[in-house]
Image 1 (cartoon, helix red, strand yellow):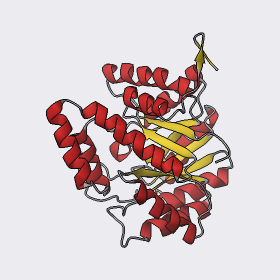
Image 2 (tube, helix red, strand yellow; image 1 turned 45 degrees about the vertical axis):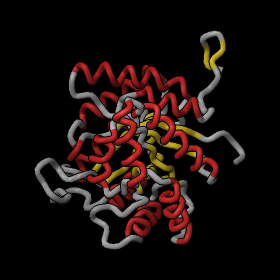
Image 3 (cartoon, helix red, strand yellow; image 1 turned 90 degrees about the horizontal axis):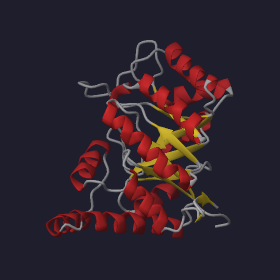
Length: 289
């Protein structure tokens, strides 16, 4: 590795006053870590579009961070979606995380808007034609719930890269070998764009298992047993720090050069992991060195 690994963080827009305070506390806590970029999500089913736009603008203006705004195909026409992208560009946003998006609340599967983009590859292609953005996309190291076969996600990622995406961020996983197998499959498919592992610091084991069930992430029995035992002894946070640090360390040893943390707007554990890995910038006399 010729340079220090790059880190990035994901935030989500607040929908209540308390959540708003938590977002800004999270940004303030993690901004000194000097992330390569930070991303701001949409809510489930494409909700919070306005809140996402407001959060993206405020983070960029107030903290000087490179903000990548999420953009999905859910419940919007092509024209409406591109209007949102144009508004981001006008606000100074130069990066977009282009996603199909989850099904709207109450729907079992994603159904394209009659006048909208049918999938994320179409969205990427349209954004690339504008020439205004660096485009990141999602990737699934374990089969997406809608995937037809184990290699479907790799082939679909190749299609998005060919459409104009410059990098991919994976869904979270619990085993480094899961990522390495996916990375090898991407190379065999001819994907040369960076594939960035998505890391979920475990704030709540019950919550992490719910997330995993929704996105098809395998939960190792050994990890389930370890967190069950840790809960009895009040050592969950210590185990979460050790587990996440060990996972990231294994990824870095395997040649990974970027780590993207899903913060859930709770900065403490992410910050401690970054520090444990030795990736936090030094602070001298109150200033970042």
